[in-house]
Image (cartoon, rainbow, N blue to C red):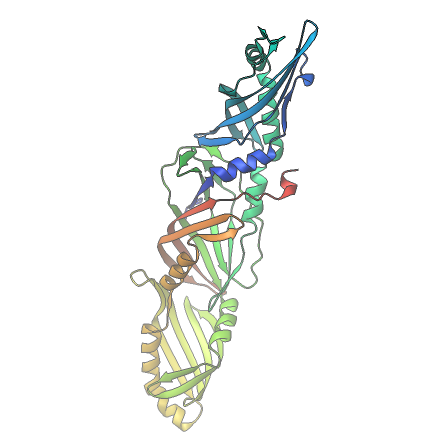
Length: 422
């Protein structure tokens, strides 16, 4: 299998109202105070939040409208003139990711519009040009305003910590009935980030990760931390994820799982009731070997050898090249052995099938608008899947898993842990 054979794509639809609420909570109440600027002398300006921020995302930048309430004081002759107004700044914040996931941002003011123009006069007769004074000083000090916004974003928005923290909270391994614990591993690979789009009142992000992945059905599986590297910027018109996974089933784990689910179960064969009392899974010359003991109508030993394969049309795993050998412990059982050998061979080949299709359907149904965290929903659909290249070794069965599907996440509410925003 080629290296980096798995390409995971995740689209995230971020509700703009949720994002606006989140950013509004992070913005300081005081955006600008002239006492912190050296070029203000007899002219005082205090800029505070004047309303809810509105935001959109396009390409690799956020464009937003920020209402600011401005209070002005100016000494004119012997009077102290005061004025107040609300201006909406049209701003744009472009960003890139550093090697450690830190954000590098650049915010600029693109436009402005007065919602409430400040008016002031001297003695009620002589107009004071407060509006032009504010705009001139705003132009002179825009680096102070945009710099404070960049500083807040860079200090408080820890994208890498949020992504890596959440991916490591995904259950691993996962217990699957009749199969056992399924664990997964991801090797660090190349991550890309496509240009943002604004669709259906949401900002859509698309991440892609090329990696080597492995599935392990093994009770001794040990979870390993997953580290997703920061992305480079790259166009990507595809939405599907394509996975080619190395996978294996540990024979001792399979043996334990089958014993838990099959020992003590009654089987009806040609009108005879047989109970499996013991099973032992092993391998021999590339074949899967199942040794067992039975009670009931047939008392004795059973030896079954077969090759596991996957039927792509029915999406089932089954055993082929089945060879059954029964040895009875008493006269009746020895007499039944000849009849049962042929019948069990037919049953194993035609009816003992594991339906991967049914399990995938359950998974698809389970992951439709599934809330995985407060305000975070996931939609996933595996549309195409197959298993290939089964190889029965001394201690495990190796094979490959091929999957194609779409994974989408919707964020309708942002709940970032306080420690990540400190």
